[in-house]
Image (cartoon, one colour):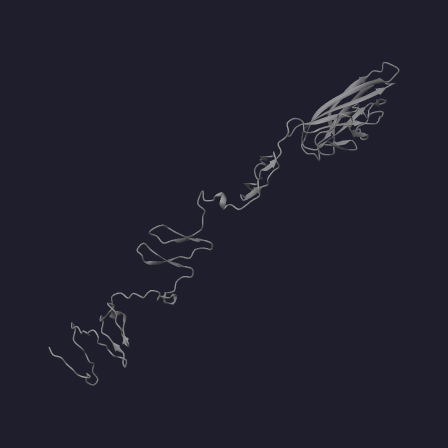
Length: 336
């Protein structure tokens, strides 16, 4: 071994200066600096490692010349250094710890964990069972309750009045708070004729009044009348009792009275009628009374109505404006 001390080593003209042969190791001692500022040097393969810190100035290094692992310093990898990806994708890690792209989800989906060992995915958000507590619900009106409409959407049922009960409206409609039907009769009315007439009147179309005698007051909404045609305030089964009173000073004959009804607000048929025979037995007026009654099912208050008839030829009706002489009472038995 020998030591060569020279100021400059030049190769022969047109040749390459080679240091060592294959298998040799050229060691640059610590403290020695290669000054290659005036040239670009290409190093042999596998001579650059990342062990320790090395400064390479004006050196051309290809990938095959690097051995070991290059670890970037903290906070040095910017977005510009990252490879392009798919718009909206995010980066996660697979079970092996390798980075993977998580595919972009649909609008409004949320990133959802798939548990250990699997990357997350975008999925439609769902509310777990039993997760909605009263504290999570929006504020509402005091006393309202929640039901569903015909489309299945939640709706608020308005607060009822004190004492009302929630009542079903049947399929396809929301329930509602309603007043319970009061036991007993809910509709009661009484009407009478006020003026005499002679002969048969069919119908009796004038001089009706609601009874106003002391001690009577109709209950509910009451019936209404126009030209002797009576309309009901509500549907249901109605009981009707009609009394006709008359007299005669000259004739002996049969006298009838009755109730007629329509279900189409046009044509009428007898709902109930009765006849009696007036037998004059004295020179003064002889009185008779004819009574009839019926039950009428009112399905529609617009089309279902009643009127009355009574009398006979030469027979005088004998009404009274202070008592029930010629008149009727009616009351609602029940709803349909």
